[in-house]
Image 1 (cartoon, rainbow, N blue to C red):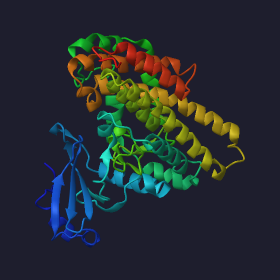
Image 2: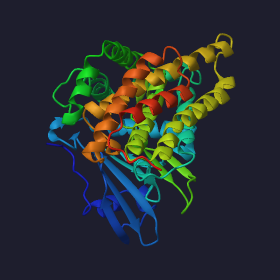
Image 3: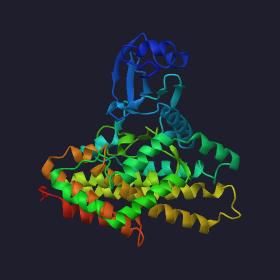
Image 4: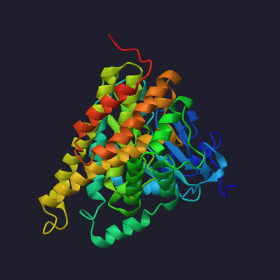
Length: 413
């Protein structure tokens, strides 16, 4: 059992009253709504609004995985990692992260900016709606973090202290198991449609895939390049769009409890994978224009990432040895590694635990082809990345394979 009290809708107001920094932001005596909205796997999330329209979000880490209960213990200290990463990243790109107001280390409660005027990006994509600017914003975010939390920006002792403070072994081990290992070597948590059993078997028998995931896992465990978000996907991005407009006027990344120092390509690959998954859904539904738009997000994120990193490059700490040829090499390696990590993230969402609603909410006859297509993209790109890792090439490969795999789609006139 937990040794701290869980927040409830009934105790929300009392908690706010006891903390002056929160009582100044919302009137606990005049709340008009309190809702628990946590739909993820790990936490309680409460949103409240007072009669003046002021809002507050309180997020509390549970000591176990919410989707399974007490049988899967989980350190609530992950909330500290989320707070520290949010504050660090917010200092670099304040427009792209929610503001943290306070942190309660005794009850693992984060108080932060209310984003109820935003929507989860995955939900927007699943509805077939475009959010122009979101992919580029996430590229800018990753580029800022890749430079600003690395040895290129931080003095040596400060960087060492930051790496030590960000050690997050329990949550990293979850990624190491669920993303890199278990899709290939089942630990009892995998599942697929019966119609996709053969696809999963082929995937698991693919020697090139096994070698690639071994490399990906090694990079993840050994390359402490920057303070990553650690779980950056369309479900951990909020977007806001004026009524009737496809253009975002606000984009925020959140849920960074998996934050740790790791390889820059990992966050990029996670985004790429989710764009492919969104495209697989759209192709399955016969929405080919939307699918192609989703795939082009790969290019938008990459271009913004590279532009932001290069924009910051002139301020690097040691230009004597880190010259322009050096940055060209780093960026080329990150681009190839992003393909590698994208392959891992795609396959785990099809075969492993914690799937996505993009695919899972499809009717089974359509889901079969979408899942098959994502697995084919995953297997293909771990090989093709060595020849050409240009974003446009990934777009072309994914489109070809997803279209070829879809089942029972209604082809548009």
